[in-house]
Image (cartoon, rainbow, N blue to C red; front, top):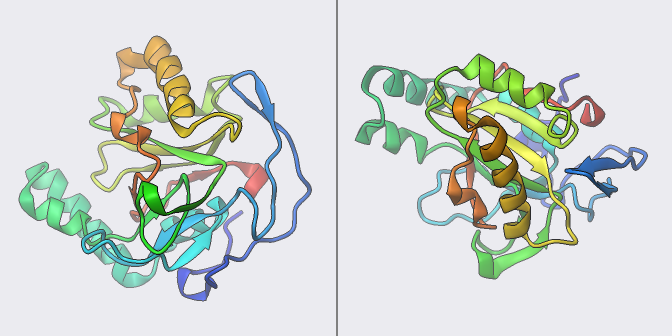
Length: 227
């Protein structure tokens, strides 16, 4: 079920509906996500392009990110659609890169202030982003991620990348382990089982301050427990 919150309505501390805590496995472990304004659901949202290292606009939840991605403001939708058309026509051109850098972005691994970098991490979230580029078959890759018995419970959101040729997922992180250890656990598992279909995460995901661009992706999938 799509949420109705739009980015212009988010307050700096974020808005979250009350939910009961529930446990989900982290590749065989158990974690209990906390649903509260100060809890581990929140990560920084930037309603500007990535250049100039802007300050975060809000702290949001994965459900709010889903709302933005599936029903963005018109200017963001037009920019995202233009970037995808440019990539389809001309590949990873300079113009495509210019358009992509103007998209809104998030820092899924946590909240940052006053800027997004490892030195200014305020609090870790329960999330990390895995980025899969240049997939040979998007449908096969998507179906594989959502039906894998271990992964399907860990994914908060899945959506097509700005280029239209890759996928991005936010997956649950074990806050008792480092961001890097979480990334390596997922990367090792995916590489071992699904390298043949391109599901090897971009190594940039090991950076805790890694930015994730926010495209228009109406086919995005949100884990039902966050609806």
